[in-house]
Length: 114
Length: 115
Image 1: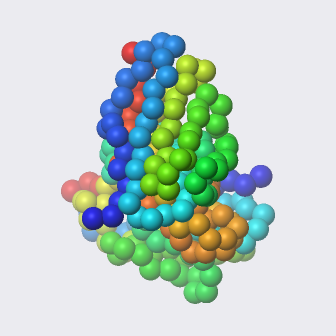
Image 2 (image 1 turned 135 degrees about the horizontal axis):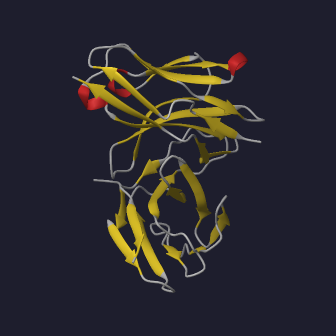
Image 3 (image 1 turned 120 degrees about the vertical axis):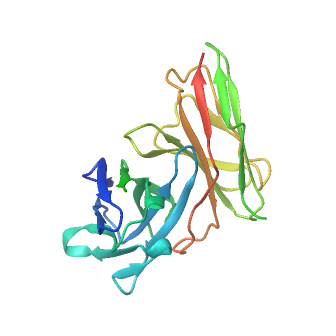
């Protein structure tokens, strides 16, 4: 079955600390992978995506993610978190035949301590 | 500016009532989608449409209906058959090409609550 798992429902980090949000997926075909961010009561904004090529992808707001096929993972990282990064983060997977019909993880809520 | 507009921001439904959520885009996107978001469950696909006058059921279509009479518009009706309609509803759009790298653009959502 196709699925996305974000093992951490809630993460708290101090401002300036590094961040890693985990994402594991199960997908039968070649996956397209995405990370989205959502502020409260708002829609989702794309942070970055992996389709092919370099397995380390850079996104907006200083985020990056690394695709590891052997581990079926696509973890999101940021070297130094800012208070404005507090939000909910969603990992999603799509297929080569339908990139819009995404399967989303449950989301990870990030809290940033001053 | 191009984007996706969802209205209303907040909507209340009475028992046995059908309500319609609006979604309009001016991005000239072919495909449009409706997702439902419940706390702790991420987003689940309700319906999607790749072209005008055609749409497909997603994972949780029961109790919902859609239409796609215009490229720009993809309204979602929450019918009285949907017994647990309280959720945050997100509309999205994308260009539609198989194997393409097009991303989803999301609206700002509609919070539906039951009175």
